[in-house]
Image (cartoon, one colour):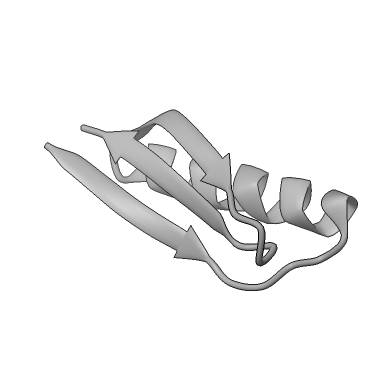
Length: 51
């Protein structure tokens, strides 16, 4: 089972990295592993998780 999560507009790279890490740790508690992610030109992130 896959799940997609969007991280909203975060223009600073340090903040974006922290948000990705926090979401990955949160999803790990639910049994999901981060498979891949992509950063868009509009400073958003798309994270793909697999259970």
